[in-house]
Amino acid sequence: MTERTILALGGNAFAAPGAPLTMARQFEFAKLVFQSLSPLLLDDRELIISHGNGPQVGHMLIRVEEALGKAYAVPLEVCVAESEGELGYVITQTLHNVLDEAGRHRPIASILTQVVVDQDDPAFQHPTKAIGPFYTSAQADEVHRRGFPLRKEAERGFRRIVPSPHPREIVDVDVIESLLRAGVLVVAAGGGGIPVIREGAQLRGVEAVVDKDLTSALLGTLIEARLLLILTDVPCAYLNFNTPDQTPLGRIGITEAQQLLDEAHFGEGSMQPKIEAGIQFSRRPDCRTIICNVDNLDQALQGLAGTIIEHD
Image (spheres, rainbow, N blue to C red):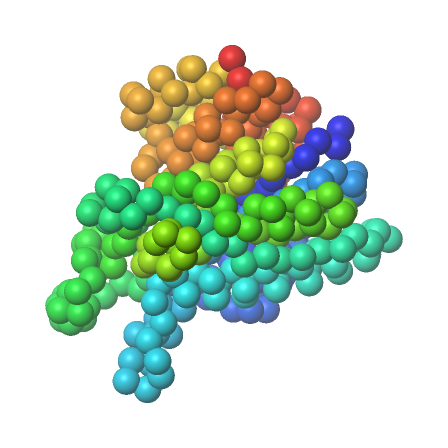
């Protein structure tokens, strides 16, 4: 099967849990990931790869903090753009090398992707997404004085919280479509895309982050992809996750998925947006969303593993 596919990778796919984040390690983990994804890369399907960027943006914000007064300030949406460039480079070079080792050659392009959000989205009044480094109480006071809201996270300290509005439009969708039709393997919508608002016919960046799974679902819908594959660090979605009653969630329709979502069965900021993205993408007939990890990818593509969300 060579259906048009959008593959959404988590930002942690390029980092080891608890280990320092380095460029060398990002290349190392990217190679491991893409070698494991050979069923997708070698069957000539039209493929878009999106990715998270949480760890990378966190490090960029640390650099911004350390450079205050020494270099020009970099707003959050520019950090998102920089992470798209950094991981776009890691992904495209690694894909080139992995395909070359398999004796295959495909053109690859990474696209800085602007994503329009609604300036009246309630998220701007109620920021919830934690990003960047942890601060001590004294550091948090200084950050707060600069106008940034913060939230205390257990015993680790304070973190900046930012709005996470819903994606409404992909500015670069026509470019992405043209590349796919030309046989290009496309890397796009990294980190959920660069958040912008429309002011008449003009675009302006805003300090926010967009969920990469929701942006992937929107992009996949606009380009009429048939498969949204969300790779995460667990084999599937679960009910009662991390409890004695934990139950794997297999094949479900969008109506059941929406009911479970409404009943708050999924963690906010973790599995919840993945289920929401799956519902959005799979509303169209003959479309499905698979949530799984790399280890059970082959079986999930055959419908034998993972969480599969389908049109009713």
